[in-house]
Amino acid sequence: MPTSPAEWKRLQAAAAAELDQRTAQAHLQILGLLRTHGHLLSDAQRRSLHKRLLRGGR
Image 1 (tube, rainbow, N blue to C red):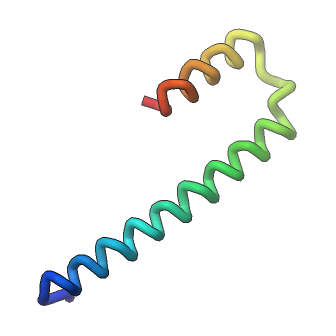
Image 2: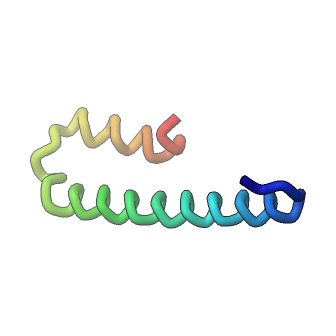
């Protein structure tokens, strides 16, 4: 367990780096799925996905 502010900052930086890595990996996996299976989406699904991607999935 971190006890000093410097240790907490290192832990926070490591957690942020891990989150960035996992986000990038998930992004690549999603792109791969869209490349291989995107043709199966309906026009409405494509439009909905496009809207969600434009607003960041919120």
